Image (tube, rainbow, N blue to C red):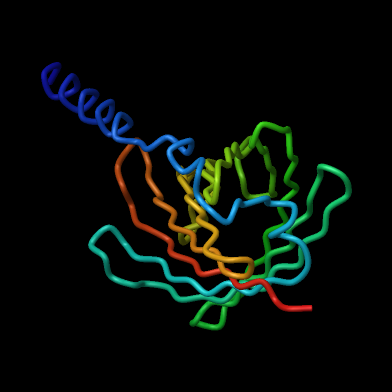
Length: 176
């Protein structure tokens, strides 16, 4: 039993070693400035895939975003392919040097983000309701600005270092 626990701890520890540093994208263009991109109305379309790769949810998100100084509010309204809806309101704070923090009602504690070049890495714990239970799962989001209107987002969802699935989103900023 002790050997099994040591092996499990080693595997979990190694899983964290494979992470890419956001600074690797520091020269990427166009430069992602959250305050500029998440300003106004945006649409996002996405899917959730389970750990086997099966698409189990499709969804659309309407986002209304406004900023006052270094604090932004992102009001996200989700509509899922099964007709269910959900709302998440983020409060995001810009701290300088590409660092951000954020909170939302279903986020446990505080989300932490770091931007460099055209990329943002956003990490947080989400209280995810499944049936009658709520699970706290880790999200590791990577967002890449493609051009002034399009951004792609890939999120890995995990628990205790074990990958549970992925969320893929395409954001599109509406024109003036």
